[in-house]
Amino acid sequence: MKFTHKRAGALGALVVTAALVLAGCGSSDDSSSSGSTTKASGPISVTFLPKNLGNPYFDTSDKGGNAAVTEFGGKYSQVGPDTGTPDAQVPFINTAAQQGVKALVVSANDPKAICDALNEARKAGTKVVTFDSDTDPSCRDLFINQATAEGIAKVQVDMIAKDVNDAGEVAILSASANATNQNSWIDLMKKDLAANHPNIKLVDTVYGNDDDQTSFDKTAALLQSHPQLKGIISPTTVGIAAAARYISTSDYKGKVAVTGLGTPNQMRKYVEDGTVTQFALWNPEDLGYLAAWGAKALVDGTITGKTGDKFTAGKLGEFTVGDGASVLLGDPFVFNKANIGQFNF
Image (cartoon, rainbow, N blue to C red):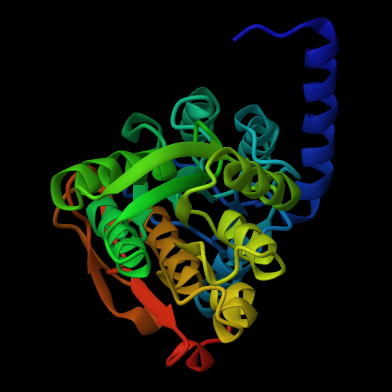
């Protein structure tokens, strides 16, 4: 990766900033090499690094992580960039390793761009757990998978098919073009639509970069570019909320369906006013909670990431490590007007 001097200077400043943020959460724990089963001594320090800060989805998942770390008597912290770009996460990874953090829980903005930094952190003794969005498996110790990619893709296709009566033009409003998870789901959605919904035509895929205003503007542009559009699938919590907000106050309300992945608190008003009939998600608080317990199990040597390893994740019970050092949280859940009042996240 090439950087100009100006770019390198900017990253250097970010390193300093990250160091300052992490200064209060440094650990005096003894280091252990990745893959070791050495028992940890003292409180286990766990740092959460989401794609970006200020994102309600990650606020919720990190809340679960904090709860888990508190339960097992560890030290929790959260750091991250303001924008969800790959290289913006690197300084925070470097600083976490320098601070001796025992475990780093990361939602990757890119499957490969942060690999070198993660592997340097692992060499320094930090266990790396990815959640939400995975990296290449060679640069982490464990992946906490919110649901299978097939299950997430299918539930979104099923919802849009029901919303548009299985016919018409639809489009996808995604996060960033490099987002590992969204791209995986989109590929599977395309295959499902082609195989099982021949009367639904996917006419466009656009990217709001998980920014509210950009996603809002992309929604407007989609509707202008495709006047026959009947539905929008947004596999990202920022995108679906922005699309619903645009539709809710426009003449498209009741004419263009919006569905995808969202949180109940973000989507409640749009479900209640009829803009959105259904959307899906796993429980991100449980996802963060499970990721923290997985990090602890790696640090204390309960697991190494080997297929068949088992660990207990507090109130969620026992989990088994699957192929590729991954752990599955569960199936997606569909929220609608009848059940959304039961949830608050």
